[in-house]
Image (cartoon, rainbow, N blue to C red; front, side, top):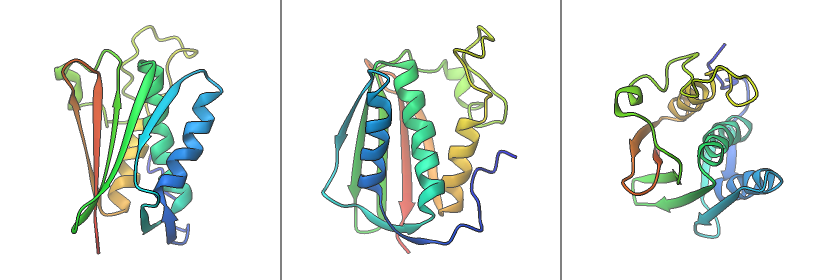
Length: 154
């Protein structure tokens, strides 16, 4: 259920910058701001629908828990790097290890209007893994939660 990546979706060349800009437009209607620092194109081979879902889950979380998000796309000789940073409260250190577990919700009011089902981060992680990548979380001092995704080049 929480795999989040339709393995039947064919792989194709995708422009991650274009995916991030599309999500930026989605959150703009929520009066949230997403700042993007990226080269004109960041091309990689993957499953574009699944990868957009991954990025959408992460960016929507960032602007939900903070008022703004900063997305950085970089390319090194060996990898593509995606960083998502918010200005929210961060995540208690003891919760970081559990955030990718299914049905874990850090929003504790139990109000379905303010929290999801606890699958978004699990789905995002699984999609990154099916693309051969890694995802790490840490609290950024003076900001909020920082998500680092690394996708190795083939």
